[in-house]
Length: 450
Image (cartoon, rainbow, N blue to C red; front, top):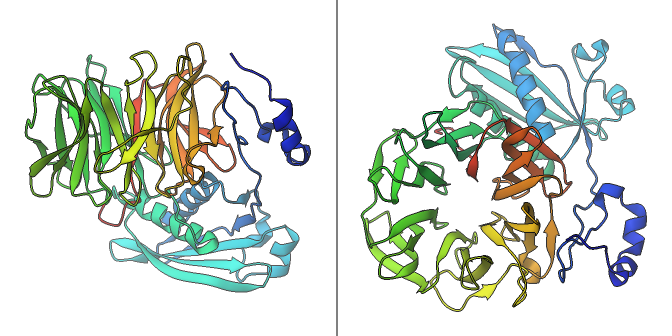
């Protein structure tokens, strides 16, 4: 049941609430838990894209390159993108005074040149306020018909974000998830960060779940019933070669996650003579190590970026009240992270640690039959929890490589789909709609070989 904000909280945040927009105001819907602001307002500079030009045959690709970069920068949620530019701005040279009059703080200009089998993009970032070129570079791009064209342009977009903000972008990445194939099976698929290039990864003709990316994006692990029982598989994303990991213990092998250095795979064993969390050295194909176990089930491990801690899900408090806990990565005493009160109801699951290390995302049951995306601030030992979604049903969050965006499974009146929320602004967008997707996992930033 949703409750109103307490008098104490209203007094503490009175000044901020008077100046914040209505959508940003604090709401308290978890009894006994102080929720932070849904989002915090931040300055977003206006960025304009001067229509890209082409020469030596580059004009055929210039419009596509500009459109992809423009959408990527809009999806970054870091800028106010200026659209519908006057035709007079398409000429040669940069009239900084004119751009300043339009309100632009940053300007991106580009020229695409034909070069052999592909193209070269000459890109410049202009500081309109100071009237100067701040950054410039040349980027090699394949032909637009090449499978790697869009990802190459996405990497350019991430460079622009880093030029302006000093922080990583997220455009050059993919999201893996499980989805029915129409034949009663559930397989793993991927889609680019902007919702393009939907691709099927597995063909196990059965149930495949819980995809997870290696830290460099070169491998993917998942749990599959291909052999009849849930077992772990690892796929080389470049060659498509797949292998089943050894059956190291009796029981179901589920919810894999790579350690930050990519050498080990943590996973849950459910059933058998000892349930719990284990790690397996995939680099050496050896060395099973137990990091938790008991009469309960622990699953869905997620490591902090420094590799010192692991968040996980557990039914230690009862099957009807799963909770999120945190413990040292090598095992040890665990502390409850989710807002559980002994004897009270509460359902929290699917933890994932931010690549920045400051937040852990998970979903929880706020109202009967409804789940919402929550984030716990690890700088405050998880005592401050923010609710990011309020509409419909929202589950299984996963972080983008920029540590700022989360993908999740959203259910709305129009059905299911993949949705993305910006933790900083609260903006939400749909990237794949009308699909019965589950357990999404966002990749790291993908380099030229991906």
